Length: 249
Length: 249
Image (cartoon, rainbow over all chains, first blue to last red; front, side, top):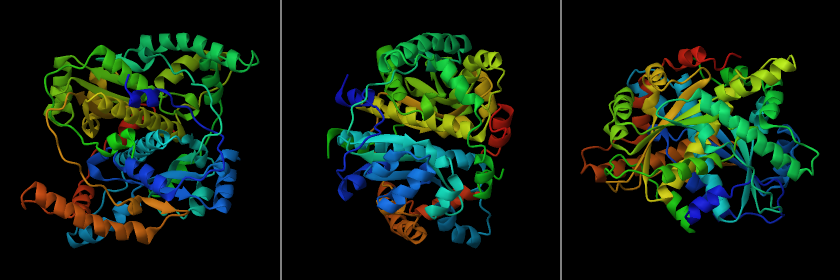
């Protein structure tokens, strides 16, 4: 196990930060490292909004489900899938050639979403290598229209997730993941194996919760997931994306 | 700049591999590192199919647009967004509680796509830390229905992208990215800046291509992107995802 794998295997989400700021240089390095992730045909279809202004962070924290760490972290990054830049910089070329743009396809929605995620994960690894901590915030999709307006996001841009970045002020333990055998399939999808391995993980997570909560909680993972799926969340996503110009076909 | 950032900044896609195999232990470490990436509410909604069988890799190479390196690499990983496992392991719980599942929302489609991408990028970083090389293959979406059938992917699973992994047999140069200022916006989206910075990048990529091709190619990036957007690719995605049970609302 080398140092890089050791770091990757030590990842925990950080939800409590000191007041220490991260520097402009650190932020620049984190984003530049994010950009070096692969991008589909080099389209680089993402943008990241760095919220450092205290008032803005406060508003974002409310919109993202009243999560205090969004306000408390040094920088709150909003990672966006961005087809707007591509649309803008190609429009003259396309007009000259009398061609029309296929920017609004489901394919390009996936490309932009994946580009944003790959860049964000590289950025997360870079931040952690500097001793910083991060947590992804899906809550930016809670009140996505308001949040997008607050950040001035144009058409063909949507916030995929947020990310708190700052100096950690806690040391949470590692959360166990599904057994490798649950997610890794050899030469073809193995339905039985993936379901069977969840039984193992149910036991692991039950014990993990019991230990962490001194026995107060012991819900198996599959039950936690059932409770989550029973609740309809963010049903506005489809209409919102449609309004923003995504996935027209 | 620490060793981890140095590695991230040195990423290049590798498209030529030696015949050296990667070991089972290496593959296990790569996937385990992938799993340690963040996952939305710990749903871990992804699977990865490791194609090691030469005949299977040959077929996948054809389906992914006749890309020889898909066949030549040691292991071809197909990273899938996977809501099937969640559906299966929660169905009894939901039945007992007389609840229905909201697994098929646009929200969960995004969650699963992002989970797959974050895990894949961690895996890419892990593989590169072992001296291996990788390249992402969007071509798995070219003939996605055939490829999914070949791999036995059930409903609510789709291949987001592939990834060749192997021992590099080439040393390509770094490909310049957009200026940081093109993708990083401070406290709000900056339309003018992101478009303006592309002009800088157009010059950078023109010079980069000229040098690489001894003057044979010098198309600015925005023109390359316009040519790409003019071509309708993978227009089957929406219908395919619908058939697989995704994004029903």
